[in-house]
Image (cartoon, rainbow, N blue to C red; front, side):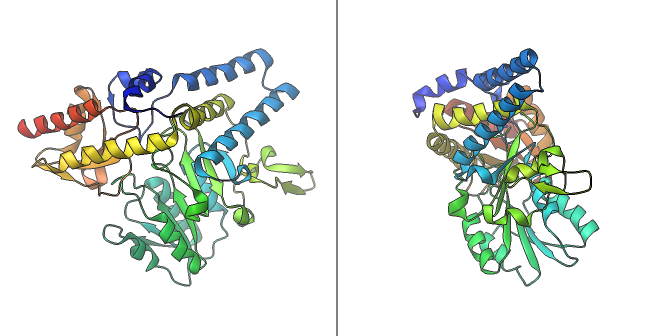
Length: 385
């Protein structure tokens, strides 16, 4: 079932936090639906009444994990045995980066618009494993900028689907197709894409895709997922292992990992949060409809971008091919001051320090009136500087 514009109020009634302020920071953490809190509480009650060990508890754990993988697989068009539950996008990225058998001098290509979740693990790999990091400048021709850096030492491209700083949607499919011609794998940071734009890992040809639960999917903190193409499962060696990683082991040192992605789930997850994530994704997929969500997010974001471009004194950083993020600079004032002033006036956005700009996350639950209010308040800041 989908909603038309007049039903936005119905959606917002299920997201109480969006009434506390003009909430434009979903790129940090999205609001929690009422049904998600109910799912969390239901699992907490189950544990309170039944305990967390024993046959019934283990069956419940298995059921929640399986059902959550199913919902994630639907969202990104993957097979359930290609999904592992994580605590964050960052954890998924680290699973892949530390799971590759590197040789000194191996090269990784990334970009100049990446989040620290990609960059910091690469920096540590450089220090410990001796890899070489090459940075593509994406602002003109992203595909050529990335592919032109490939050589016979390139092992991996690690890049965002949507830049957290500019909101640009990177042409991942084209990059992946060309990378595979050189036998180079592609790892995607999906922190700003999952729930904001369509993701079809099969169509994109992606090798590895890591997503969060708490942003555009409106799930709990401490949740996420990682996709690894089935054919590449054995290429990624688990770096953190525990009882949950293996089918069997003995105390003589013999062990066998699970045959699927659960090998990366070394420790017991916090099941109430996983139940909440499942509920959030199911609500988006079935309660609202993701095609409507994607179209509305795109429409509202593009409207904000176009209106800001008309205002003298505002520099828009976000290009035309963007998702729900709009980054811009209010000239003549400090950008952190702009964020503080807008916050005091009930508008929640964030600072992008490295680009000296502010970023508004426009999601499906935002209203046209809220977009207009943000634009008007930006005009006021310019007038009062």
